[in-house]
Image (cartoon, rainbow, N blue to C red; front, side, top):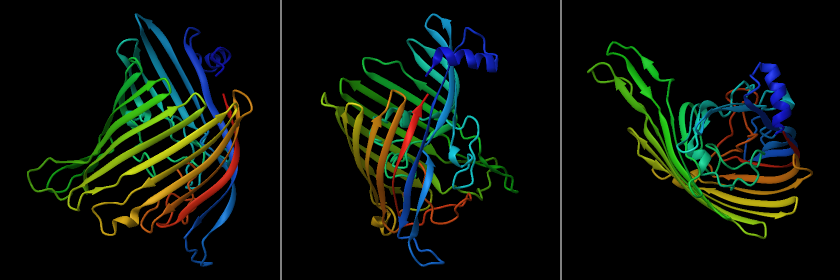
Length: 384
């Protein structure tokens, strides 16, 4: 970040007072890759989804943030961050969606030197932020492994309309709490009265660091509550009562530049009428640094879906191999190869640049169950 120079530029552009501490940050990243999905039947050619060569945005973004010292250890803080999603394609992704302002972590709040930081806005849950200890070895590339549609850390979420607290660092321990308010409730007014469905979501998490050791633990809960304004039996019933995630992860970095880590996540869904389900996932990662270069590998597995017929058909796994080289403090080249293996009822996909077997270019784009996405490529990332 070029805080001093850019602060002046932004202050001029947005008429921000000279005493405000403002910075601009982000990165531009793109790559060229070859991708395909085995096991997809093409209705026209009756063959696997054909391999395609594509130029991809690798999760590029730009953000503005600042703070104002209010005295006595108290600061006002703010941030606006947005995706530069698919800048190489005019800002439109494979679902036909275009990037908009404040799509990523954007908030306003207060930070106290003793109590911690409180913010309101669109912000990653405490579960997502504090259980991330570096196991995503090729994060922000097609070989990214974390996310609700991926093979690991499926409880990760960015909470809209949310409140979040993050503690100061207490001798290596940082704790957090977040609560997302559901403001898009199901509402109807049948003769029996008004009916509502809400899906508030909250999480608790903590991260501990000591030397080369880093540990993260978290709990996340999404509710699906129903209320009716009439005593008449409700005519609408939600299918899910609540969804819960628990995660524990640890990593250790040796003086040789070697980092090894592992994580385990428990997921539970309490259904209203159907049987409750549970599905766990785990992840192993290793990184070896050689000066400006590094080699990286990981393997993750999504387990069977207990509570349904043919539970083993919902399993999936993903392996990743990658390498990076820092050309400077700002510029990095990288390469990767990855493959997801889905059993016949699973449809895990790439967290960044997913591949679709149907509906390409529309909001209905999806990957067929049982298809196996795979990709290899290389790219360039410039931080600013």
